[in-house]
Length: 338
Image: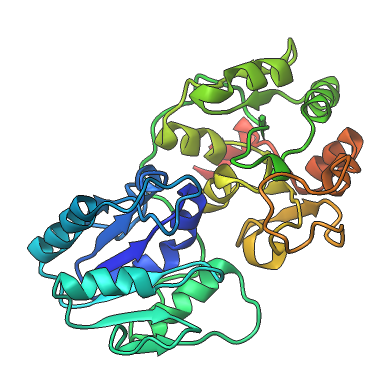
């Protein structure tokens, strides 16, 4: 079985329940884009990963290249899948991918599609209401006859040992985002770190290699700065051990949910929170979900002052951490449990 889920890290993680459903009865090849490859390799149930950049999905795509298309067709043909499911977000069409998979000889294809698919789809599934994205994708797998193997997000385990990076009960703060419209002001992040530290909490600041200046600013002298120091499995392990995670609507929010960490979600309403907020874990969603930018899918904030998130104070975040943070395990209680 081939399962396609293009786009980024968070999108692939949200596809996890659908992938696991297929994997209950089939060998799975997961087709992912360059920005989702690392997450694809973390998904339970994915036996192999094919990487291919879909020019109709990436925000900054290369021009359509026949040779690039031919490479995908030949690669899929070499896998000889019996069938394929194309997983998409609510705003994406599966039909370009369906056409390429037909050219690769895939005999049966299922997808969610509002558009007339002609002969491109064997299963044209439709979804009622406005469910979370992971449930939306899982509903396609179930409509294709695969049994749900759990609805929560998940990652492959064991994760790397990161126990020496921070003490028990630490809070992770992840200030970076893939789009400026989703970012909480860096000054607010830095202030929240100071307030958390003043309460006696150890704080770990995470970010990618291109976010080192940001993480250093946010961490200051009050937090452990791990900006640019972790690969994705290591980041998953750090999030796994956190009492709580403070993060905007970006891939690590879904990675936190996949390891079961409580999330304080600084959520800009450019996309609906009911679809995209961290799924299946304790969470507090902060941000004005009725702001003028709601539903615009804007990458850069169209409203002066970015009020949907700038109105959230550092004290609001600290209060949310207090409400959902996991308690620190007592060594005495661990010994009693053993």
